Image 1 (cartoon, rainbow, N blue to C red):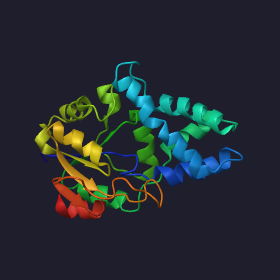
Image 2 (spheres, helix red, strand yellow):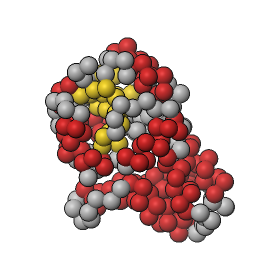
Image 3 (cartoon, one colour):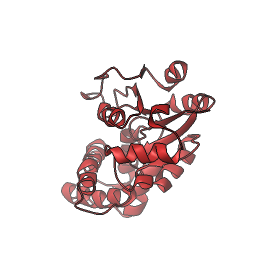
Length: 224
């Protein structure tokens, strides 16, 4: 088994938007839960960019999510009785329907691991929640930096003891695959056209000739 598939998680493996909105609806009064979920997620890249740019040392995503939650609550003029409990929703995101079966089948062909900006603890709890049968956990915590920095992909394949060209990065986000390809990895695109809701306009199609283009994870298994 001299190959591996590593996966983006938020959006590619799990439906963060509906899962977060469902929790927000019970935990934050007087807000549109989907607008709140989108705003919370909207703080994700700016918070990581400060770290990627060297303006702040590495901080696990769990802490960034909590900081961002406080920011968004203030913006909405809303309150929450237990911020830490609400923040744990990121450990309780439901997988897309094809993901558990697809990963289970793919694991018979290759090593599988998340290559996420989420921390190891977050990924481990998310795997237990969604029955995601990872062989290992790689990504930001391992590299002490955030995608799409090339070091995250390279450190991830290094700890799997494989050369980059024996590892396929799977993502629903074209920019993730652009970076993975630049690091020498193989690439696989799986569209999630409702990640951001019914009016989504980004990442509906592959923008390049990725090594694999699949309709879902079960299709990915047949093409792997």
